[in-house]
Length: 129
Image (cartoon, rainbow, N blue to C red):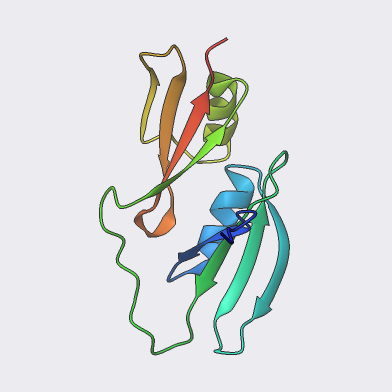
């Protein structure tokens, strides 16, 4: 049976690509790897994080396309951090406050959340030691 071999990227559609890219690069430290316009006219930006091969594709459709309205708790991205308290303090100094947490989970991990632009949610996880 033929199977897929690797997850390459996840696409998130947005209304304001610049605000979204700014959040992910400034608050989370992701790196913009490439930017271009698709054959259908969509603006695309690919973002990467260290220690992962998968990327996040941010997409803004051309003018006239229906706007994005993200349903509450529809999906989120989760990122591992070494020291959640220090990470949150550095993000706050840049103007990005946590929307929930930090909270210790039953497994001993510590989790917290940011509200990203467009209504998407970002989870930060400090694994139990």
